Image 1 (cartoon, rainbow, N blue to C red):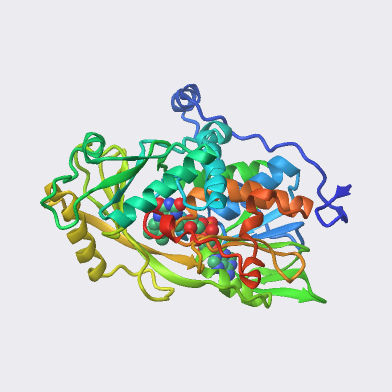
Image 2: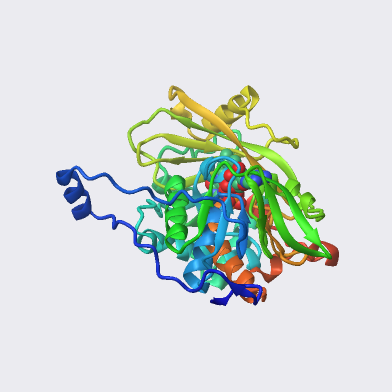
Length: 434
Ligand SMILES: Cc1cc2nc3c(=O)[nH]c(=O)nc-3n(C[C@H](O)[C@H](O)[C@H](O)COP(=O)(O)OP(=O)(O)OC[C@H]3O[C@@H](n4cnc5c(N)ncnc54)[C@H](O)[C@@H]3O)c2cc1C
């Protein structure tokens, strides 16, 4: 017997990694010739009566947390509870932009660590997450936004993040289909260029973390909805699910758009509202767009996938809702604004649009850490920008859960900042660019 995270004896001690099939070109060939199928990425387990840690939410945050608990802290007796299928929330609906060119030093340091973790993730998880660091351009159409770009570039450079302000000629070189002429309604005056930014295959990241977490012993329970959280004398004692009750001393809320519903169950009120965010994708066209292009003033951004589809996004819908229906108003506005930037796309057809739920905080920064209820932690408030933070928040929240000490990197994002009036003000870099 060893001790669990609450210091009590645990029924699971440090255990060996569960072996996984190794993905490689040779493995593919060998299995192809032998006609041997690949094993499932993670096990299907019976729900146990108790776990050392229960993670609610099978998105990138919950899965990364379960992975790093096992990998870095030998905490294996972990359940990830997901009401639907993993990646059914924002983690399977986002536009997969990864970057670290934020505005506040706290934000830049935090996302910089995530980009570093993402750079090594495919090798670490032995799962091709297709991270393409093709660069990220945030356009400025006014003197005011150019000033913010310069500010961001200086903060970025001080912290060691590669960012600089560039002019229209350089923008045209990087993204030749952008209309950088002065004839347009919103002329492009400059841009913040961030070479390490790019896009990733979000499903692969979710599956890779799920497989990795499973290898370290965590159990992934899909179709398992948390219906209540039990709290006795100010501390968590268990959760009630549609598949029965689980005793646990630690619950981590990683439910993004649903996080206030979960927090309410523990009697914790979060300063978060939920709004839908929509996106759309076109039919594939010949590859022409290398960097991700964002225009805050026009409320749009665009990237091109490896298959050639153009992925478009915008700001959150201006109302609170749990609806994930797309709207015609969104498509019309999006198309109008995209054509301002790239008139040559006029005949490209939109293939599909969708929406996901975003948990918006007043300062466009996450809430990570303990709450007034002992054993109840939150990793929420990811709004429109939380996908890129998956690895770093998993790593840092795992350290917090294991040691009961808040790591420096996430200390500024604590729940107490709202009572103390220490808001972070990340809106200038997080409201459209995601
Ligand atoms: C259209 C769109 C575009 C975006 N683009 C980007 C981008 O380019 N870059 C970026 O960094 N971010 C982006 N985001 C934001 C990003 O997707 C989210 O911040 C991130 O995925 C949140 O991850 P998560 O793991 O915290 O939550 P989620 O992935 O939302 O997972 C939460 C999970 O909790 C589950 N759940 C809820 N209630 C319960 C319950 N009672 N019991 C059990 N399970 C429950 C849900 O089913 C869900 O699967 C975008 C979001 C959207 C919608």
